[in-house]
Length: 609
Ligand code: 0FV
Ligand code: MN
Ligand code: MN
Ligand code: MN
Ligand code: MN
Image (cartoon, rainbow, N blue to C red; front, side, top):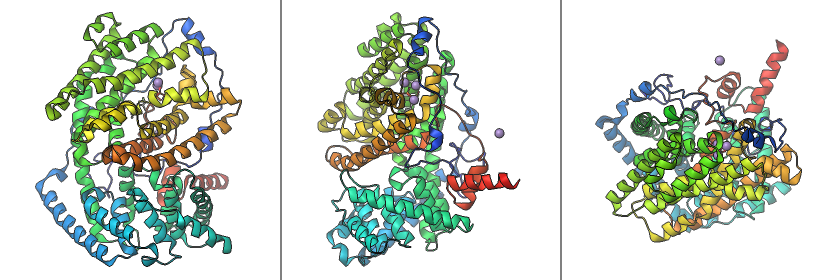
């Protein structure tokens, strides 16, 4: 059961094709993101004059609830727990041996442990090892032209918050000035990955990123044509799809575990523990999922409403991306509820409600007064009461555990969201198209990132501090930038359907309307915004460590990563897929080729046929 290496359709949770490398996050928007439905701002107000309720025609939920309840894993038992303890001890010795040696193999070991997804077991050991690495001169540690190790050192130190200069990029740029081409694939790959940890104004890293991207793509292309992809080539195409810094840790761990065995210097001990730990963590997720799935079924909200998305399993999947550590079960469970409410309430504002009703609902949430139920239309009564009870129940749990009244905070999280929704509804009903900046100043809140993050703070730490509360109340920069990217990728993935059924103009349309640019130019602008925001996040992650817990900081980057993953091929959330891999995915999975190469292969087949 739940053997990661032997996937079986019935026994493995199928979260939208997790086993094949079919979904691509590009560093540039692929052509298929560019829709050709022309945008005209007026018809929405026509819809509304006739007083017709809109419909999104969402497909039903595709998950069998009995199947979800039947999940059961043998990895919950004592036998595996003891096995894991033993392996953990062996790996701990291995780490301390490597730390004594102080050579580049220490960095490689840390990187491998992180990629295999169990660095959370060795946080102290890794920190101590990196303290030492940081304290020695780079030159005492590796050769000047050892680009693999130098870039890895830069990346690991940045990931862990040390101050490290971008000298490695400067030196590499000098190197390629002299000999314009290099065949050091591992070195270039390492530099490419490292460049995504750069801050704003570290422009040399951008040049190196460009250079290595072009050369790595070229190398993969030539290699794929020879039909002989080794692991390094598979790793390169994986990195070109999306760099490590943009990948969802838990999903990346799964990919890496499945591919690690093909590496020439694979270490069986590291792999064995990875598989065991992954499956044990998976068993925890199964229990979480069973809990939230029962909760959602018993609430029965979508069935009563009849127009909103029913995505219980998908709602939970988001939280696995945000907080993968098994110890955050309760956080995953509570935030799944939050996401289910966000989705339902979003559909009320976007699809079903009239402007008058939406104003009333917003007022009810602002007053947080249960007597307001009387004034609401029936379909809003049940939703408001469910939100009210669930939120107050969370506040009760917080008070039970920490003795603190969190109602003002949880309440504010919902008020901010509903107010932002109402701004969009007001725009919609007046046929107004805001400027890009005006739209974004509201849209990073209406995507619900800050709401989810604020509520999660209380579930991710036992040491709630006044400083943290104060900065989260005002929204930290990290909250803003991570939610901004979340909004932009959601708009790229969902706005075609949204406009077709009648919704406010989203980021692309606002930009086009304001600047007269065409859709391609708008997408390019959005791409630049996303890249800039990532650089700001890289810096801010380090700054906000002083006041916010690390798990909370990590969860904000993970929210961005998860959004990029979910929306990379359109609406991966609202539209339920769950299909078998098709020709492109099978070819990519088999050969390690990227999507472009797979399409070329398919073209050749068509011509031949
Ligand atoms: C997006 O739907 C939506 F409902 C989301 C992202 C809810 C899930 C929330 C989290 C995982 C935090 P839709 O595209 O309809 O949203 P907008 O804001 O565009 O109406
Ligand atoms: Mn919506
Ligand atoms: Mn909306
Ligand atoms: Mn959307
Ligand atoms: Mn079919």
